[in-house]
Amino acid sequence: MGDPDSRNLKTTRGWVQGYNAQAVVGEGQIVIAAEISTESLDTANLEPMIVSACEELSAAGVQEQPGIALADAGYWKNEAIESLIARGIQTLVAPDADRRKEPRPRTSRRAL
Image 1 (cartoon, rainbow, N blue to C red):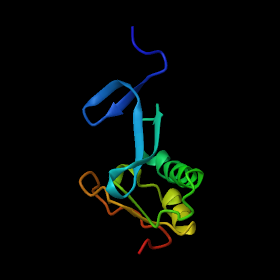
Image 2: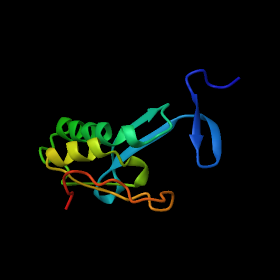
Image 3: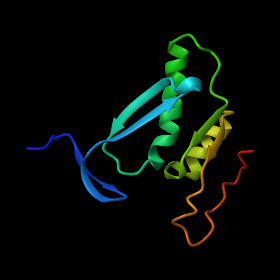
Image 4: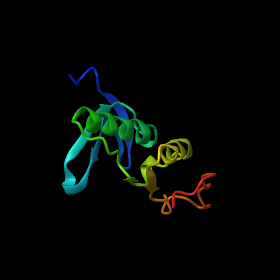
């Protein structure tokens, strides 16, 4: 019997019963925040994970927020990127060039 809290998640290799784990790391690859969800797509996790990392840093007495968020193409979501930029966090997300036949729509604000 499988874990009743896990879900069928779509992966690049098909479907798997499990979880989607997220982590935010800082310099030196130190984990600042980590979460587990049952959502297949990472797009919904960019902003909440960066916000969680900021909250964890604040709770540890670190007043400086991250200056740059770097993520792979799976995290591309215009609204999340724009929201982080509005918070003063430069957000760099790789384009998903391998799977797209057309250029990805640009955000209304540039990250650089």
